[in-house]
Length: 217
Image (cartoon, helix red, strand yellow):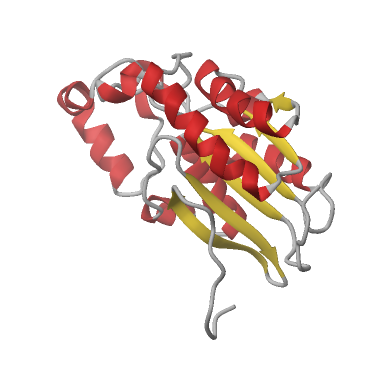
């Protein structure tokens, strides 16, 4: 349990997994089960030391190895069990998976550009972004509901899944989800539950959240 929570309300930390070889090669991973590199493990270890200072109440992770290995570093420091859920996997992208960015542009350029314009596209014949949010956001909310009123949940997942989940929880139109920039390996975003619903407090952060000082608290 956290110490002085100051009645701040529930908080969700959405943490992207550490580096993989396919990240370095700019290959689209999707739901392919790729392991962390040694550097990725080191990233997870460093980030876990920071996130442990938040004294989280629960950890839930994608069941893919890169997410589970990242979550295990925080579990080792906090003593919390990691609950895994396939609903937090990265977007399934069919024929795109395993291809480099350049190969995707060469083979599926029109599809890629339509996706970037915010059109509903089944990349490689895979999932729509809204379908990813349909499966991932309820997992997050289910675990949030089990927290104490000032509790903190750490969700270990993937860049695309985190972006769509944030967009859904904030009530943004799917076309605008791309406005949320991507997450660096082992960085995180923080949502806080307020009187009007969820607020984005931190995005693509690699340091502990700092208090907001000013008129927009």
